[in-house]
Image 1: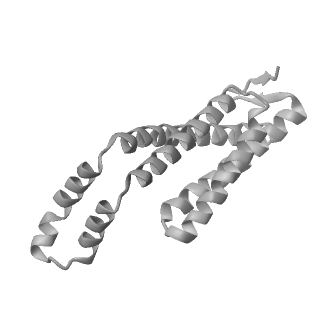
Image 2: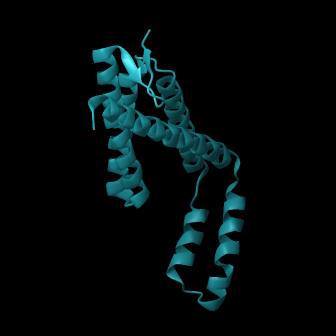
Length: 172
């Protein structure tokens, strides 16, 4: 594969990774608003409706009882923290993705730094919570960081950005 073809392929991966990052940002913002406006009573009712059948068959079911205990201990401060985390994370990520799509050169090092910090925090949380999703998102962040760094270096070196259709744009 010639070097230009390789760059176009990497650029496609970069654009796809940005689309995924952008979609994840939108989901986080929507989730943040949902968490912000949902009541503890609503959460408890949902958990009870989900676990009701299981508890009628086995009142000592550990998982169902854990969910009920978790929903009852969901405090207003926890709710506000989760909402703030999702909203800020989603908005920051969304703004960075938007600026990367707009090919604003300053956004590349900023995105690399912010995505690295998010990855470090997600890794920290993984060791405390053990959620496999944190690892999945961290691996995706590492891929996006590498692609962003590659794209940034290519643009700085050549002054152009490879395009999907074989043309290249000259950076302003």
